[in-house]
Image (cartoon, rainbow, N blue to C red):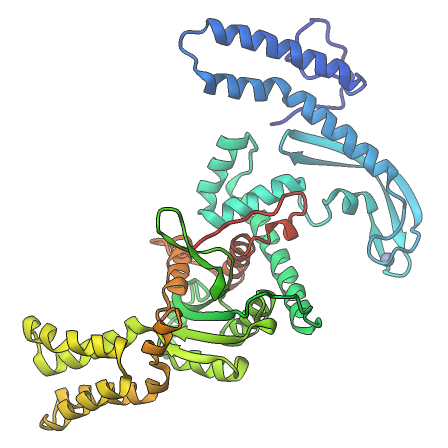
Length: 478
Ligand SMILES: [Zn+2]
């Protein structure tokens, strides 16, 4: 990908492949590229061992120099046309000096441009307005196109793999360490943008759009563990101080969607066409604020009602009371069934047949009738037990059912066509874990929050806010 572009060497041979001096008009470079393509086409037709893939690779190579030159000239022209004003406060810059060279990699190769630098008296900083105009300001040496590719790949796969995949697909060479640094910087930029967007969502007056049908907002939360090396190398010292080194930390995840955005694919697979995602390592408070902002962006303000579905974790229902006090609450049906099964195991031990016979009608009643009916049977079972570990286990579960009784309105929920399970958020957790919880991987709070933030921008179809040169993606996902 290294190309020398400042040597004014006039080529003696009429080769179409050699790097051309920058003085040549693009039309001439274009003609050379066309000539190279013609030759490649002919070679391709005659080559018995080449399929169309070979031509695709060759054709991209044939036009690369034209594209690189065009990009370099456009970048230089835009730099020259950028007024010498501070990009932050718009004040005219002083002590201007021209000719500051900067070389960076684009998707077509390395280019060098000359920019003007000046001093902003108001900001008391040296500024290069052309860098801002070109989208280079906070990048080490990569164009916005390459920055975006690095960020996307690093949020999808381990960096060593991302580096190889990037080069394989685009020819852009980004060593592993550089790609890691670039992706993290983009992730940190994403975090700053997220904070900004969240503030806008919570402070701006919600525009009341006209909705034809009143809709319901569904909100789900869950948590999972991530492995980090925040005490890396300090384990022995920590143990001496009587502390266990902490390696596993909670990642808090939430999702929200409008009930009327739930549908089916042609093949019958359930899908949610528009869905918000939140994922953070920064604690429950961070999740609460991010999820609230996300729900507002997805239309919580105009929703006829809201419904929270999750497992029995105490933090979830505290958060719900605190931030979504108007929302109805529902315990994930599958978790309720697991707690019924726990009672069954306490009553029947390893006798699976008896357990099944006992459990099935209760599950049906819980789903189709009422929780109180089920609780009465659990209480009756408890009354028949002598004091001991089994009675203690059953008593614990009876308490659980009492505690969540109001959240077990499964019959009403099913009749209203509402979900009774928290499947979507659990699927989200699984997908994120695939990336962040690979064997032998360790993360740091700073690093994984940055990458996770990139991931949520992608999943929320907001990548174009981070990289305005890309077009909005529309991923209907589950
Ligand atoms: Zn300024």
